[in-house]
Length: 120
Image 1: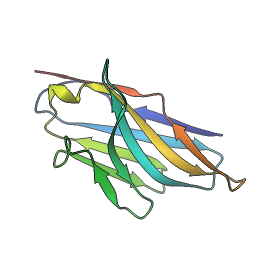
Image 2: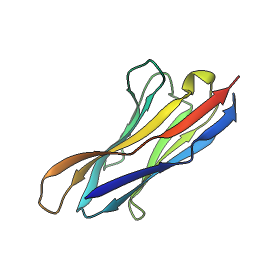
Image 3: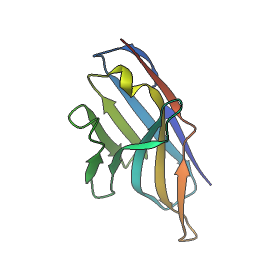
Image 4: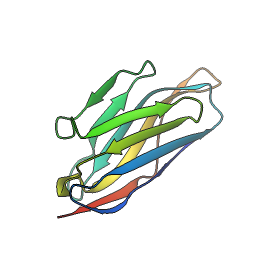
């Protein structure tokens, strides 16, 4: 019903920047809260940033001041601008969205992930 597709990952050097995108498609009424998570090898998946439909944002302490989450309602796309990347940011990044379906039920949908690797 809903597909989330991340893009924009890659290999960069420490101090460089990347912008991740997450495009939503399918049959739904609207996207509510959206989030970026990441998971490094051997670690649990952690919340990186979140944005409400109203535009309120929340960040993990480790990325505050470096990452910016945003969304485009027309394109149904979520973004994560990542500046001053550090090797510790290396992980698979996943987007997640709370989706209001046409049946008026709520679904939390996940993307397949995109790899971000930061070399020192």
